Image 1 (tube, rainbow, N blue to C red):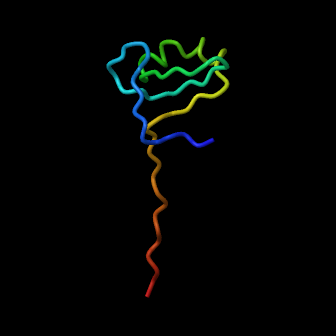
Image 2 (cartoon, rainbow, N blue to C red):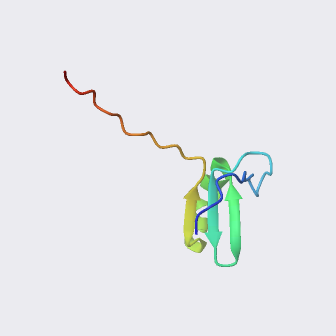
Length: 68
C-alpha cells in the first residue's frame, strides 16, 4: 500500500516540528521529528516493524551530454 504523500505529519512528542520519521507499530503508528526520533531510537527500533523517512529527497540521475 502506497503512502499518501500529500499528508503532513507533525511530531507526536512536541507537536510543533514537522515529522521526519513515521514509525509503524503493530498497534498503530507514531510520527517524530529528527530530534525526538534520535532521542528514542533504541526503544523504537525494538518495537517498530518499519521506519519511514519522510520528506526525503533523492537526486535525479544526471544525464551525460552526448559528444557531437
